[in-house]
Length: 129
Image 1 (cartoon, rainbow, N blue to C red):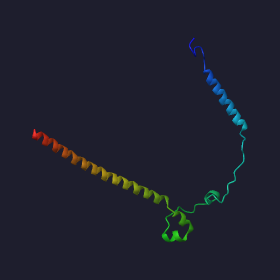
Image 2 (tube, rainbow, N blue to C red; image 1 turned 60 degrees about the horizontal axis):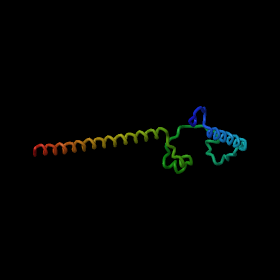
Image 3 (tube, rainbow, N blue to C red; image 1 turned 90 degrees about the horizontal axis):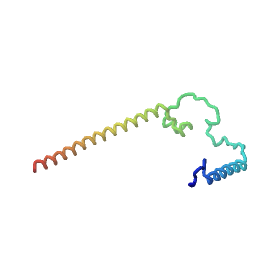
């Protein structure tokens, strides 16, 4: 009878491997103590808006240079509004598209120049024959 004929399931060595894995897993679960300690988080490390309650009085607006120097709220953030961010994003996108169009036109012009040169070479070869 050839090796492995008539056997069903896993080979003998793999049964042993699965048994060892299962035993090790049970052993690790039994030895690992369950920790239910809560870590204390000091509130001084967290920003105030995560700890304290607050009300948004008005949407943020860009600060002037004077306000950035005198008002503490403007000094750290600069108070950039969502509308200003949107305008800056679309200006950037417009610039990228404009630059892409300029370079696409340059590529087309250069390709036409190279095509003309190649055509002239072919004509010269045909005329010389």
